Image 1 (cartoon, rainbow, N blue to C red):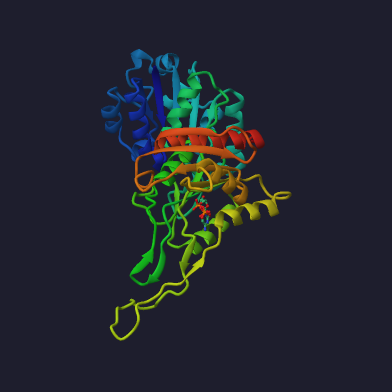
Image 2 (image 1 turned 90 degrees about the horizontal axis):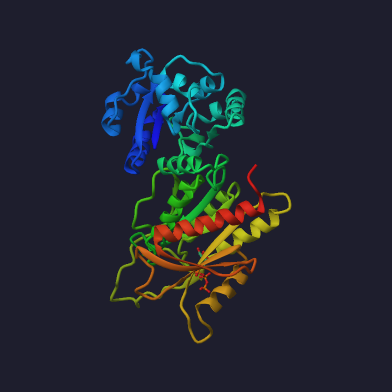
Length: 413
Ligand code: CTP
């Protein structure tokens, strides 16, 4: 496929190098047209090297080839990333001051805009009107992701991740002109890792959760277009790019962070392994072994059940509040009282969450491994759904199920 990749003058231009790679690695022939302003962020040499094609931003280069006509006509797809407020305005009003805007006016195939700008600019009435105009003419304009922006500000305006733009572009050429990423405009909070409950300044009670599943879920939700907040208890793996990370240690800290985050979340996924108990007392100083005293006895007290509290909070706010989907995880072993699924069904009832992702655990299973096999149980009583494979594949299946549930309950405006 011949793709024209138009690069706007925003700091996110550097991320477009990864998008270009995704296109070329998938075998597409990409011509990059950077705006003059964008070359202050990424130089034309980068685009030439990565695309293997000459790069120009002037209608006066290679005039005999009438580049804007040729490129616009020949392109099977035009992708603009980052689509700045300025570029959206120029495209909406049909301006033709440079090679990129000329090419857009000559386009015959689908056009995808991936916006990136400060939140105020994205929300400004002028930009809203330009986006509406472009959409009404059949162009696809992605919702920007939310999160940390270039300055100290944060909010909607981040360039969607290169993988997300790539997926949207492929969907667009397959004729899904109304394609939006399934979780675009949604906020998803995910807890991950294992809590640590301190005994003294150097010791804690912990668990074997690696955080891999939670991180894979965060990546899948991000790639589905969601704004992702990762409540990160102890993890053996780094958090992914493009998500907001809230680092924390204990179950009580996780409770506070989860209840706060729930206020503006469309989905809350509790994949963290939360300690059910914590030491009743935390010593300010290191606990020493002493020959003149008995060995210490650790008394434990119960931690609050965060998942259950989230459900109660959601239910109490439901008549006036937003629809919210709450997803729990259950690590189960079968025993004399029942098999894994029987325990899981009972837990789903007890916790009251909408979906429960059930892992069958043994000491050699799940924790720290890269593969996983789960069953997704729904409170609605629909058939249990199995998913297995790498944690990435399992996460994609879970996020896809969540999108289906969410979009069937309250379609996005
Ligand atoms: N969870 C929670 N708060 C806790 C304990 C667990 O929110 N104090 C959440 C986990 O994040 C997970 C789900 O509850 O999504 C189930 O966790 P699990 O440890 O399997 O269940 P428990 O509540 O500990 O139930 P049980 O002890 O009966 O197995």
